[in-house]
Amino acid sequence: MSLAKPDLSGRLALVTGASRGIGYQFALQLAEAGAEVIAVARTVGGLEELDDSIKEKGGKCTLVPLDLKDLEGIDRLGGVIAERWGKLDILMANAGVLGTISPVGHVKAKTFDELMTVNLNSVWRLIRTTDPLLRQSDAGRAILMSSSVAHSARAYWGPYAASKAAIEILGRTWAAETEKTPLRVNNVNPGATRTHMRAQAMPGEKAESLPTAQETASKIIPLTSPELTQTGMLWDVPTQSWQNYHLPS
Ligand code: NAP
Image 1 (cartoon, rainbow, N blue to C red):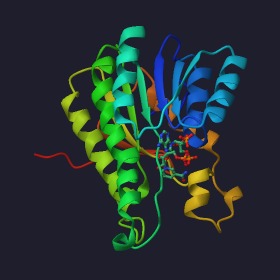
Image 2: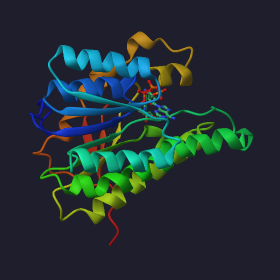
Image 3: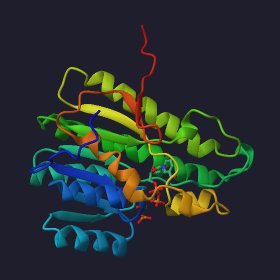
Image 4: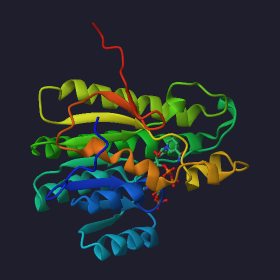
């Protein structure tokens, strides 16, 4: 895959978790490439900062302060996009929470349920509401954020890892169902990145040694290119390579 910045002029993108971290930088870079951005998160301050940065560069942004636990709110957002724009070109399902790092049997039910609602149920609701809109695009692109722990069964990361493994299979299924359309759907492992979530997961770590959110986002942006051919695959940012899945026979 060419890592050149795509030209996204005239394209409409929806980014969740756009108030900070990888989502914020991804939204900004989409706008820099010419896309109009619909930015979703709860923290209005972070969204407004993004809006200012995008407008400073002459870009266009619509802010949607929304808690993704409000699943009907996601359905309504799809309806608003359909009414106002009639299509969507890019979906970046990026928002996520870590939950608690603890033995799987010690996780509180409320924590588990909230994590699954934000990390998984909201992604399925996003898929459901944006699928018809992305199919209206001549080159719809969907990116679902995963993590290396989806494949590693790392001790104490159970709920988060399970949510990411489930996202990957949802993404692959969606890709299989849309293979013969222009829509391309891929999962992404962003790799360790200097963000709020990483600091929460690894409090003792020297963050300066990690890639910034800006660097990580720049290595995911090419997946939004209208020229992209891959679908149903995992883009691994640390190795900058496509990981193929074994397809059922
Ligand atoms: P982050 O800095 O903590 O940002 C998370 C984003 O998700 C924020 O914008 C947050 O916005 C949003 N979010 C969380 N709960 C939400 C809710 N209930 N409703 C709406 N938005 C919500 O994390 P990050 O490191 O950039 O992570 C981005 C993605 O990459 C996540 O899916 C994460 O699992 C994945 N990832 C990250 C790393 C890493 O090392 N950083 C590694 C592997 C995978 P508000 O709080 O404003 O709502």
